[in-house]
Image (tube, rainbow, N blue to C red; front, side, top):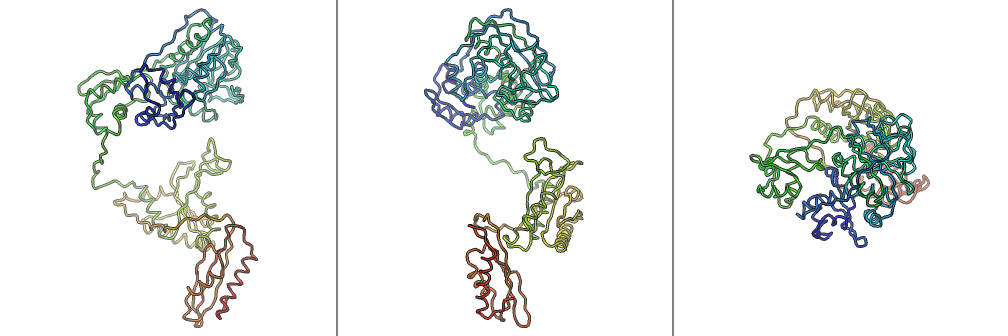
Length: 624
């Protein structure tokens, strides 16, 4: 939220601390100030208002309230001359979607002559908003000042009254930015008797757009369900300043203040404008919330002893009404503080204004000798321990897939439009990729496993997949051995399906049969520490060489000669076989060639292998 220091200062008789000092004090008690930028004769504070305080702080008045509480400076009341009510055309308002619109206010204003007011454009420009026309600028100005989103319709373009209803299937609206949106029954709209005029709480439409030629208006100030606005704005892909405020639960009690300020603005712009009665559909007024809190509770939660007088001073600075009770207070927070719901919230308010730096750091008490070990967590790690110590590496694949039982409403890509129903699909791709690159890892084939959540039609559960990239026969044998090892170590059968070198089973059903763990005895071998180096984007070539040497010839001696003749393109090499026959020893080595600069050819590698072979034969060794 961009806040103008000059605009903010208009709420105080006394001079505020310098922008830099104020930014530091705001950061340590309210919200992080991410930037302080000089702009002409003004300074702009970029305040990162988090969702827990967005219900009141996405406005200059909201930040002024915080500055008053933080600094102790008294915030002055800012009121504007209000127009008198006169007769205008009749306006009918009907709210059908009562569960999504707790309050709807509307007012007819006639004979409006839009006039430019330089100070308005200056205020908007300071916080990064462009001027559109005097009427729309007024709505934006009040929203940035008060926090209440507002809208104005050209009354001469509205057919009949105003209806707050759900859209009809296939109904369309062209938004103010020229985008055509196809609506359905889940979208709340503000409509006239024929067409939608706006997507409620999110974006206005072209049909009743206000222009410089507009002379008659219908003003709107309303409140909408926060959760609905967030979900709908996300689904439609339309995020606006208005939707951001509505989705954070801006108080319905302040819709009236927004309507008053907007009316006062238009009255200041043109004193000849005619203002009709305000229609206020507000069947269930917001209930005043009261919280009981004890002094002892505040001090215990903060870990510091704060005097009663100091706590009450903080209540006053935060505009809390309070009545003293035995050992505490009955507090009534301001109506706009929708974030204060439980006594712990009050303790937090006291703590942040006292200053977190004044609260000493204390180690929490010991919880005792016996700690509860989460069963699922413990046995998952036990499975990891067994598999890793058996030479398998863990992989993590995407939870999204190209097919499955659960459809993703907004998929990231066409091949990720379902939640995975099993591990096998993505795991098979990982096994194949690891198998292709096994020589680079110094392995004859890939051995991997994955533990992850899957989302089948009958419910969500944790699955285990184990894969071996060896030949079909060897893979089956290896998987049989490792599942038997798991069964023996955990004491329950690991039954599952083996297909294409992959074993998969449900861990939840296996863990159900296991007792509660008594101790944390997981021991996983430490990973080797190696220096990172970038990988080559070019393909590698694998070659083997085997030879007979006389007894007494060490393999290291042979290995050094091979590496010397192979040159710098050897990415990895190792000895993979040795045996004795007829008094001679056979050594076999594998070389993985790869360049960081180009794709190697068979011809280039053949020349290297010929050079290696010649060097070995020069010692009288027989290359097989």
